[in-house]
Each structure stands twice: as structure tokens, then as C-alpha cells.
Image 1 (tube, one colour):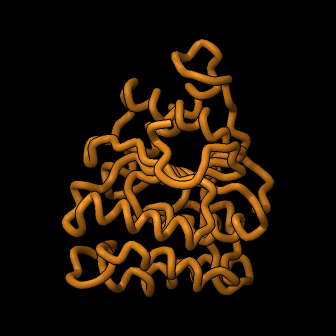
Image 2 (tube, one colour):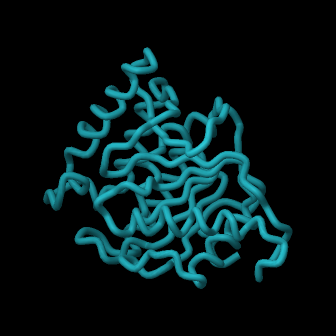
Length: 233
């Protein structure tokens, strides 16, 4: 499939969809690592190559994503190569995301939260939510059998969320840090913003520690589910 850039296509236990390279590592990387360590098939699908970013070239970011994939233990990493800065719920984009969902057939899907200051993150949340519905429709103009995802969780981006699912990532914190820092071009050298900065690890670790206090653990990643669910990745 055109979206496959690393690993292999096979049914996944968990698929994280990210607007740009590094978003999945920052938002839910610990959960992905934890699941991969238990033998689950875990994947990441980027929607863009992040070509509008101030730092790094698309080629550099592709290579960094491959390094991070190995650190996490991903079964699959893909990229739809949609234009950066234009993510929205259009029919064209919706069909592309829905096809990738059918191709990877995840049980659980992790999406960027709809509350965010970055327009690509809010656009991706709306786009992917619609694509999930399309992937399950028998009459949709897609290849392969319809697929309905069992669980949908939204991971935190750059804004507060009302988290109702927490995952203890204390034991994989060092591996999580390594996966983020594999995106070296974004988190070294000149500080561009609070999210593209050498300070990224300290800022995000503080957030993980904050959520961990509610679960009685040292570090936890936070998610929001729109419906009650049971999950133990």
C-alpha cells in the first residue's frame, strides 16, 4: 500500500494517527511502547510529512520517524503524505484515511484531541473521526472489507483535556524519551515554540507526572473517550 513506509501491513491491536511526525510519540508514545512490549501489534499513521515546519526537511523527518519506530517497537508506520497545513474533513482525505484503517484493521485507535490550538490537530481529529465511520460502511468506495474499530481514544496535544482514561507509563519512560528525541531536528538547537524546543521532555514529563497523581503512579498518559469503555493495554 502507498502509505506503508516501515514494517508490514497486518491487523493491528493499536493504531495511533498523528497529523505530523513526532505527534504520536509525544501524545501517546508511552502507551504504544507498553503495548508493543506485551507482544501487541502497534502502528502509527502520519497524515503529513510535516513539511511546513520551521525545523528539519521532510527527508530528515522521514529518517527520524524510522528511528523512532524501531525504538517504540512498531509493527507498522505509514504516511499518507497529505499537504501539511491543510488538514480538514474533505471527502478526498476521508477516503484516504478510511482506506488506511481498513488496511491495518486496528482494534483500538488513538486520535489527536479535537481541542488544540494547532489547526492541523483539530482538523485531523474531525477528519479521522469521520474516516472511522466510512471505514465501517459496506457501500463506501474503498477496497477491502468494512472494519469497525472497537475503541477510540483521543490523546492530549497542546491544550487541556477532560481525561477519563489514564495509562501507567512509568516503566517505559526512558524508552519514551528516546523515541521523542529520535526526532532530533525538532527538539535540539534553536527554540521555535514551547512545543518545538529542547525543553520538550521536561514539559511533557511534568504533564505525565500530573496525570500520574490521579492514578497513584509516577507517570501516566491521558486520553479522553467519548463513551465509557474498558481498556488495559
